Image (cartoon, rainbow, N blue to C red; front, top):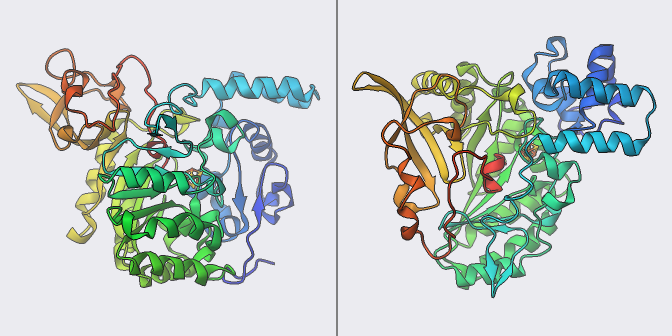
Length: 463
Ligand code: SF4
């Protein structure tokens, strides 16, 4: 018998334990096999709330939340799926299976070289683990205890971290170095606490990270943002968890200290906001004085219907949240399964945006969190008889690039910035010459069109 969502205790399931969930009976042999094989490569974690309340089991495998959280056969190319399947069913040694799994993961563009080296700030010449500083005004902090999630999204950019690729982990043990860095960098107005999901931490641990940032000598840090999917995957975190009230008191403390507390809430589908407990969670968060901003990537099979986005934004506004970003899915993990061409992303955004009132038109997108910055597809235009993408930076390594329009040749298949060609000249303006304008804190780095550049950690996932 299902527990009421309000009384539910957090109960996660993984590849090995999912067969104990009552819903396992709904799955065909083919789906069970897909989970067993694909989840050896990609992270898999759901919880009883997602299973009982968010997935509509009579619609699987096409149910959007099932697509969002469960591994699918098509996430691996045939050759890799069958090779792995053969090893597993022949009882091959674990070492041999592990080797194949690792090879497949490395093929999936986990950004092994650059992501740990770019944007990493230093203090007295020492690189600070668990911090990133890409944009002048915003520092990212990855608390060590917050590097997991209540459930995993199968598209997530953080997948290497969740499958134990230790060399790709960002995490900070405590906030001492963070505060020392912030004290020296008074240009920092925003701190983004991210993960994984920092709200998997108990309230006391989170307070140990946040309270020191509220010190008067860090008053220049005006906004503290927390990237989280708990509002969708485990809204009980704010309502019935045993430290839910303590967490909300911490939020109130941040606000009382004169800071803006913004929850960057990752909602992928309006169903995540339909549950009464999810609405109650949102209301309780907003009652603390915190603000909630809605953001998510556009994902094929999950939210490619413009009606999804209009319902999500409209419901969010009704409950007091602010629509913020629609992202374009990045090229990592099973991206060929999830990605959509930029032209389609633009159409989905346009259609959804046109259908909502002005209060929901705070949303921006579709936006690619690329190496040079967040690039929005602003339109498809005709200039001199040529069809072009109109683009602009919403955020950039170099603040001078922000809101500067530029154009790329129209390409119906392109799904990322590095697949686009400049409409005029050989290079985009940001590929040349402007490094001299970069502020001191941001190291100049060349943008190479031919390679997939590592994004900043914040850019790799929406939480
Ligand atoms: S997208 Fe966010 S919630 Fe989903 S797995 Fe990644 S970090 Fe976790």
